[in-house]
Length: 87
Image (cartoon, rainbow, N blue to C red; front, side):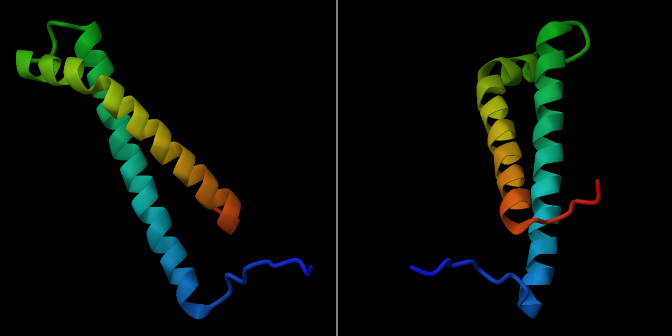
């Protein structure tokens, strides 16, 4: 059986890869920021209002899972496409 390897050199795929990388990077930064806000809101009680602490207490696990999933998808995207994020 011959080895099958996809060819990602189609003209429209280059632009699509850049757009997907921008979306993944933006989503990952926003999720990480939400995770930081949730942790800080729970640790330091006097800084944030009660509504933010209630939100953080209810959603910190969901935000953590979403951040981990976005990080995994970004890693798989970079590995599978062999895309250089510029680091």
